[in-house]
Image: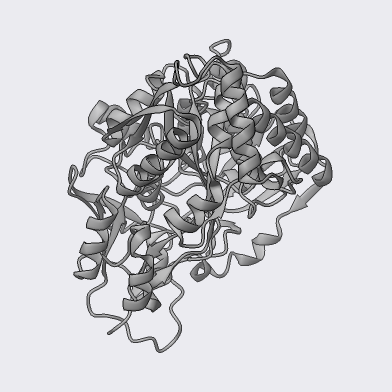
Length: 534
């Protein structure tokens, strides 16, 4: 049955999406905000985004069909309204005043162009899997090279009408459309500038801001897009993103007044920061998990007993309380507790004492042939950051004390680390996953066979079957049960060791307003922000 979206009622209130400034608020004379990034963005192309550094910037440079409000709920973006037929066929009606940063109108064909490039195997887009997750009609055959990209289930009915057909009903489809990988792309500028189309002065986006200046590893400066459809409600006149991969350096810059907001802070400084600036320290729960991945295709991690032993001997309670101590929760499963539609049952990790887990781990390692005369040797790779080094030292020490393992620690800068991760040049690797939408599949889908993000190289037909069943189910209770069974397989096969669930730890100046601190996905558009007098 065709349904009219209830969010259509929001169309007359564009201020809900942008900076919501209470009447009479004394604004600062200069509306220039400096935001911290944890690393230099690997790319400013929606086709090549990798992680959080890219996401934070791309959300300002591009706008998809839908966006998110401060609470994480879906709001109209380029699409002012839409029709939904059974969660499988959607018709989106685009705003006639949506414009690119060069003044061109945003057309339905721009979404068709962007999405076809996303799934084109010749593009090797990093988030092609996201389109597969959305179940666009024919997407699997296109990604596999069996069909041309123009077979994708997306059609520009006219300039302002986009029809999307899925291969099956997807109950969370609308929430996916807020992700930057599903942004429209400006074909003319991309073809004109070739590989240089993401440079300042050449990048044509449709978000609230445009890239005006960039110094690699130093800063990215954004200024308002004069053609953005809701420009009247964008308060900031400049946004500067500063990549700093050392938390202590970022915190020092913040305390010196150089940053308005940080992406994190050193965990060991939590108590001192709470005493020094209590009203500026925030640690709400986040849709994210910190974990170690084991390369299941390389010895010694191709032995499930070794993987289990390593996972069991990580004292997650100790890590959360002592190594971190800033409100993080131990991760006894990969999917965070805050995830919508996730109802995990107690498992071995959550119900066993650490002593019992350690004893089980030692028995497993002995069974695998390791002991004092043949100690387990392995390397642990992490990207350069103080917290990752601290975690690696703590966990390597646990493995040494409990298992007699000899662990070599290796750190690499972000881009080198990404290369090693992608090519499988590691044994144990630090990683984290922050969901792109609020559903268990956003986490568990990562470990499906053939998933581009499956760095553990994990393959399990039973696991894949559970994911497929959950994707096809429209029953929330059944989906929750299937996801819990998938979690049980992850624990038994141990391709990964979940360690802790993220909190969204950051520092925010009291005069910076509008930051959506309780957004579970940590989606923060700069157009929501403004500065008050202080």
